[in-house]
Image (cartoon, rainbow, N blue to C red; front, side):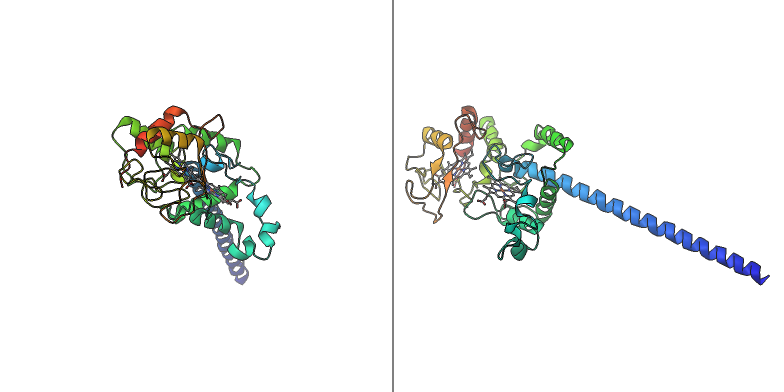
Length: 291
Ligand code: HEC
Ligand code: HEC
C-alpha cells in the first residue's frame, strides 16, 4: 500500500518536473525568438534610416564615397577601430573614451565630427531610437557583411517614393508650390545631399545656413556675396555648385563667426556630379528661402 502511494507520488512529482521543464524551455525559446525579432526589426528600421540620411555620403552598402561627398567606409570599422586595434586600445582610444565601438558609432552619429561635413544628427532633430537603430545596422554590416538580399532590397527601396521624402527631422520645412522649386526641394533634402551640410535657416552646419541667399540682405554668413567673393546671382550660384571651393583664407571672411571648410564640387563627370538641370531646380528652390 505505502509502496503504491510512493510510486504515485514519484510519478506525480516527475510529471510536475517534466511539465515545468517543458514550460521553462518554451518560455526561453519564445523569449529568444522575441529578442531576435526585435533585433531584426531594429536593424531593418536602422537600414531604412541609413539609406535616407547616410547613404548619400557613406554609400548604400557602407563602403564609403557616396554620391554627395567622399566620406569614409563604415563597413570595416570593426577591423579598423574595433577591439584589438590601436585606435581602440591606445591610451586615449575608443575604449577609454566611449567604452565600446557601438557607443563610439552612436556618439558620432548624434554629435557629428567637428569641422567636417559629418553632421551632428541630434541637433538636426534625429531621435535616440533612430540613432541606436542606425548604429545596430552599422554593426551588422561589419566585414562588408551586408547580404546581397539586403543590398537588393535597399536598391529597390531607393527607387520608391518613400525614399524621396525629405528627412523626417524636417517635417515642418514647407515645400514650395511651384513644381520646379518643389523638384529642387526634393533634390536639396534628398539625393543631392545639400541638407547634410546646409540648413535653410541662418543656423550653420558644416556649411552656412542658406536662408535669404537671393534676398536683399543675403545669408547670415556671406551677405549678398558668395564665399569666393562673387555677387549672388543665378549664374554665379550655378558656377559655385559646379565648382565648389572656398574654405579658410579664400574670399571674404564669414560674418557669422564660423570657420567654414571648402564646399565640394558637384559638376564634371564624377560620381558626385549633378546634371545642370538638377542644379537649376535646386537654385529655383534656393530662391524661395527668405530670412
Ligand atoms: C554630408 C556627408 C555625410 C553624411 C550625410 C553623413 N556622414 Fe558620416 N561622415 C562624413 C565624413 C566626411 C566623415 C569623416 C569625418 C572626419 O573624421 O573627418 C564621417 C564620419 C562618420 C563616422 C566615423 C567613421 C570613422 O572612421 O571613425 C561615422 C560612424 C559616421 N560618419 C556615420 C554616419 C551616419 C550613421 C550617418 C547618417 C545618419 C552619416 N554618417 C551621415 C560625412 C557624412
Ligand atoms: C560637404 C558639405 C557640403 C555639401 C554636401 C554642400 N555644401 Fe554648400 N557649402 C559648404 C561649405 C563648407 C560652404 C562655405 C564655404 C566657405 O565658406 O568658404 C558652402 C557654401 C555654399 C553656398 C554659399 C552660401 C553663402 O552664404 O553665400 C551655397 C549657395 C551652397 N553652399 C549651396 C549648396 C548646395 C545647393 C548643395 C547641394 C547640391 C551644397 N551646397 C552641398 C559645404 C557643403
